[in-house]
Length: 278
Image 1 (cartoon, one colour):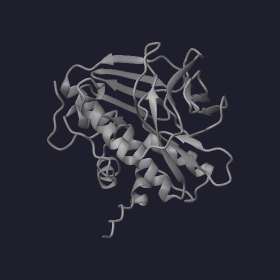
Image 2: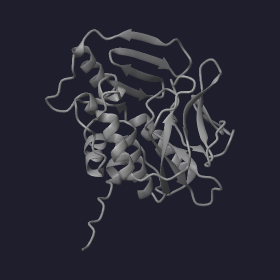
Image 3: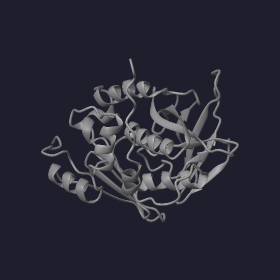
Image 4: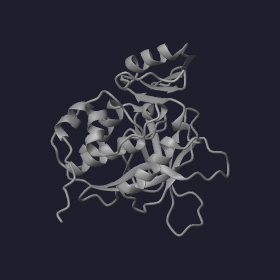
């Protein structure tokens, strides 16, 4: 029995969506620029789980939603789409899973629920960590080389990778982002053990449906522009200027205002006929 071939990404449509044009070669410069264009071009959002739907990670569904549908997604959607695009450009991609540490209490061990990837560039001694799906102001704008203690200035942000204390048999890496007060803040920790697409199908279902998952019942939307980072958590809207200016915070009045802000400020379309919960 012949196995059906996996669908191919419409690379032209994807690159148009993120506003990228250039020579399509698997180089470090292309990796950095495509990664940044994706991070700035497609918002982070969990509208589907809030509406009671599990997002599909199949490539045609990702294209219909994130590329052609005026939508964003959360980490599994973003990074599955970027992985397909990078492979189409000739890069070697390995999917990984991380434990989110941002906001965790000391000693709190969370499950591996965040998707990210390693990307190898021919001729480069070290692979790159790539991740366009971490919905936080400490997310990467550009990939960072897998080198301990080397700092990345992915302007206006700064990141580094370190080896935190660890008793396990595999080398542990921690991504840190430099906060406004100059302190390094842990974002997540991971090993380079490969994960496969079916692993994320299970994790995706858990995150979208578990009543204890924050993504299952509260709206989270993020968008990064060259000028600011925009975040919506429930009805709490935060705008953080990229130049270090004063952060603006306000609470949206009602569902109607949330939906207007989604369509305007975040450029996220709701599914046809859908209304957010009150």
